[in-house]
Image (cartoon, rainbow, N blue to C red; front, side):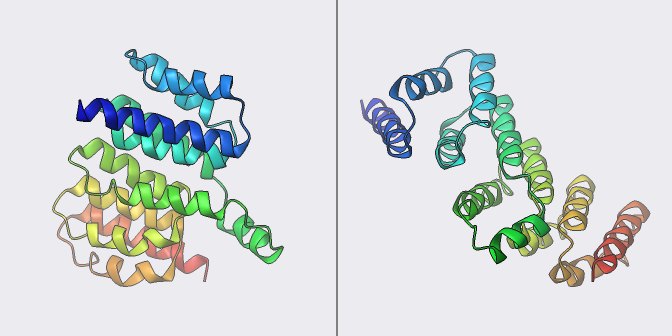
Length: 203
């Protein structure tokens, strides 16, 4: 009974978000029905369609769905959708900020925070995908949380984090990356050097 009430409450909240944003009720009903469909493929298609809608609507919906979704395949699709929605370079963001056009910054911050919350997910594939996503959207706020992951033993985690930090290109990552220059793993050491060179090129 409690679970049914919670689902009803979450769905009502989603509809309210859609109505406030100006989306039609028919359109919102279709998205919400598909997101709750038993068929994984239907849910993934709904997520893909949402990525092309108004971000004020889609980002809160996708983040809420991530919290409730049990399928790894669908959760990975949500991460991909957040990347697609937020894939805009730091330079373009800076130009928008200078021009006083920051209407999308709230949704960007929501997306970054949601992805940061996945860095310690129980599923390693979700963690790896979140790391990649933060690098792709050049999330400067992710530099410190990503740097913490460099102390983990898992080589793939280290390499993914280094690639993400290389894409973000923020000086704050240098200290954490420097700690890997004495790493016994030559592949990790090489990628640490590459990351430092990439960051240095943009100074």
